[in-house]
Image (cartoon, rainbow, N blue to C red; front, top):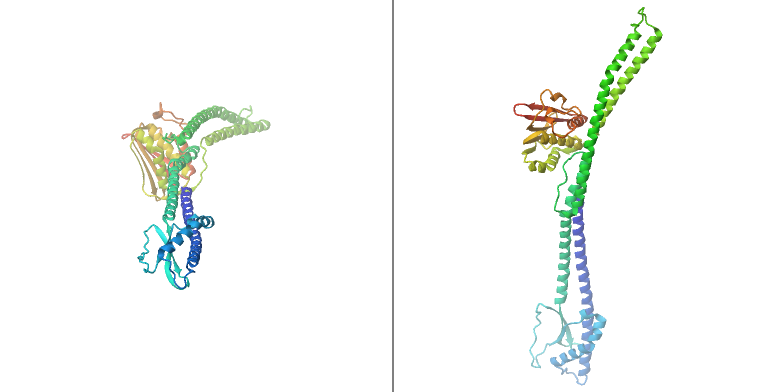
Length: 459
């Protein structure tokens, strides 16, 4: 999710930069238009003044041309030069209206008030008489700024709309693709570590339908292969045990005979025959070698049953509670089995989280398989001498006589009759606990039909 947050930040920063850049470019564009407009207005004022002077040359010191007369000069000049102005300065620099306002009322006209109507931007230029000293009026260039304002609004609204659409797309991708995939991406890792047995739930999201289907097929395949491996391992162990017990008595007898020969027991005079004693010692040594070979085969076969190499790291008890909640809450609710997952303190422990999850998974699966569905409780506790994970449930219990063998490999109690399994789960769980410096203890109450597994993990 950190990468997703960075993506959001990058999108926001991109649009902030785009927003600022667009507005700066727009202001630069407006400024260029204003500069062109100023040049145009200066040229227009000079041109109008030239025409005005030409028409007043015939008079001595009087400017007889009235305000309306000057307005006609302006209108004529703008009409004659409109195309040239547009070509040279651009259409946006051309004023919408050029108006002359006389400062004198001698001609009988009333002064005009310069009041903007909110839709125009007026540029006022002084207009002097023929002597270039006497101010006789004002030339007002009116620009309708609705276009520029509307363009500015459209630009910013478009940018904001694009920003909101992009954020919406990011949120949609996050909610429908990235977040679900982040949860799905943890499944293959947990599956490879044998932490989970549940399938991925089907969803309405068509984006991951085939992926979920393929992962569930892979899960079924792995579980079937693991089941087959467990069966082969059980047959292998059974064969080795049978061989060991079958060889044990003959090898013991051979060693006994060799010892008797080496002591001269079978000699008529009871004296030790040196050559016979040497042969008997070799026979005895070979018998010991056969016994050691059988023991090593059994040990190696047992070691291959549990494939676990601790990877120690720090994590919190809450992470184990979340693991149980995510992996078993839906399953228990579907089976209508009441449950509770609790911690007494969210302490940090340094151990192998994956290994502990495998232990808890095995004990939870057993509680579901062999329990009566009345209730399953899990307490994850931090005590002075270490951590205790207590799993309780009620159901069909093994007898008190069977409890010492409950953690043996490929052993199954009388309560497992008719229930699928290979008798390797509790053996594996305890081996992992031992590998983490802990152990697993079991207690039963035959009256209440309650069984309790206490997993101890040292600090």
